[in-house]
Length: 235
Length: 258
Image 1 (tube, rainbow over the protein chains, first blue to last red):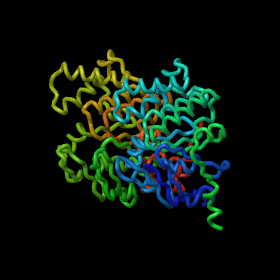
Image 2: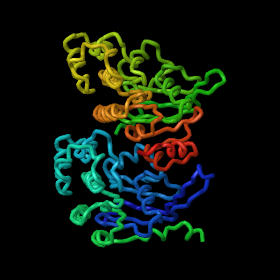
Image 3: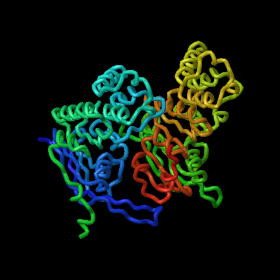
Image 4: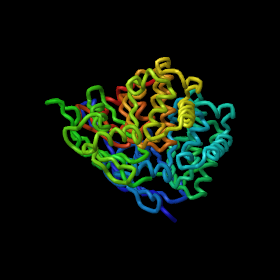
């Protein structure tokens, strides 16, 4: 089976220059890989570096050491040292990310926010909107909200817009940062079903889920992130 | 994705006597890429923009532009006429103050039409139709086509300036604080408009701004300037989410949260 994502000996620390240059090690020696159709869940207590790992995988956080190898467009890309334009290209087609919070754009409707990734890949506006509408309907977002900018939506409504946007493209690799945190039981079940569909299509998923029920429903494997504690490696 | 850069900038410096405007700035810009240049006032970002757009001659360094004929030309060695033609057709420049980029005493339609005439369009009916179409695209009522920009609000003037710049289908647009001095609601409308146009037209753009939220919304890549030098650069969300340099951390931590 193909392995679209390999993380090898990745280390990350923050240097807080505004606090006298204090250095905060976050993780060290992070190594794992994810196969097609597999959902790997990052586990461990809060503050152990789970979100930081996801952000490094997406390129939001810089990487101090190690490699993040992704299969993109028939070649291998090391996201840890890729040029910005390469990272953007990988995000456009190969790599998706559902963050905890939706970053709203003024004046842009929920439907267009969801359709945008398809549009950016050159799909015609009408077709992209149709796909977006299907996903929003599936996630039970009231139809009256589709034409409105989500700035005034509730947390759960924004989260569903965010999920629809992340799931609209068939990425080979999909990162999920607590996508079900602010959803009710009914919509949690919808998302669990959508994740299962992605797995069946062969997407490699990496996620953070604090909800034990969701985690047990989707996880093929749980990685204990406290294993990557820098203190452990310093000792 | 195009494989060759549109603009190649190498070690560009500009000195005002012994004072530094900007120093040793190097980067490449690809078609369709939006680069934000951020930093506080006096950091050299406007000087850099002026050098890149040939409004100022750099003291040293080289700026090469990929012409439509497929060849790179060194901007410093281009004739004045050729440079002006480039400015009027293949490039756009959006000023912070629309009065600098518009002719305030001719009609809105003529402001847009003038650029079309510079590329050889002569048919009055076509020019007027295209101008009307562009006014609509920047959300100005078409019945304002014969009004002078003096009679427009600040936000409308800025949108008119954008229409004037984009009508010739430029490949590269320079913007100097395009949302500075506008109300936030007007700003949001303009940002949304610029974002859509850049995407639909596949423009490359260099946007100077001190507003990190504007940079986040519009740009792919970001350069942070301080004391004339580029101190940090990279993917926009990497620079904003994980700033490395002391000054960048100070900038990011100074953003007011709403």
